[in-house]
Length: 264
Image (tube, rainbow, N blue to C red; front, side):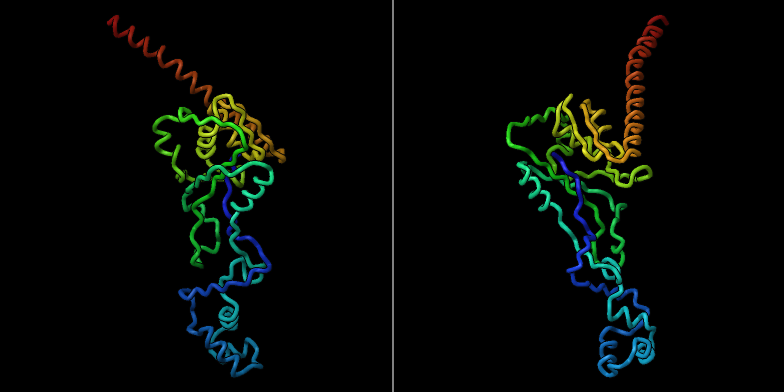
């Protein structure tokens, strides 16, 4: 069983204390938090507007210095934290009698900067997702012949897989690249094995399975995505059929050229 998932960068947690992100470079006023606190101690009865008038700044500046300018999750929302998912997956699997066997890392490109706070904090752009591989007790085949020699060198035994993200999610909101599914299928299954995807989505997994001569089962609860998957699979089947026909014609064309050359 292979699960591709990223850690949750904005996991809502009401018990999490608020983190104040004071973006100094964006401050248009020279008023500091210490200056506001000093004014409050001198004039404890002052409202925010009165403090602003005393300090010579706007009341928004007073609020930002006291409450933070870029709090994760938004100033008026529940605070968020990072949630690491690997430990939870491991426990769920062990409870079911399957075990974590290996972990690969999908290195995406920074076009998938999926944290809107990145530019206003010291948080890094999200560029990786984890690929967790689980196994159940029993025998399994270790067959490097599933891959070409070059594939084995490039990614077969490598932990980090550098694969470009999907450039456009125009038909489904959470697509992953075909190459990611193809590598998993080639590495962990043989020709005519059955590949099961319980969250079919746009059909990336079954398309990769079909392309690599595996049988497949896809499960999807949204009818619109069932139709989308079927359409995407049909397009792939049509393209591969045309490609196979073209390959069969190449020797015939070459033979005709050879015959014409010999006659000349």
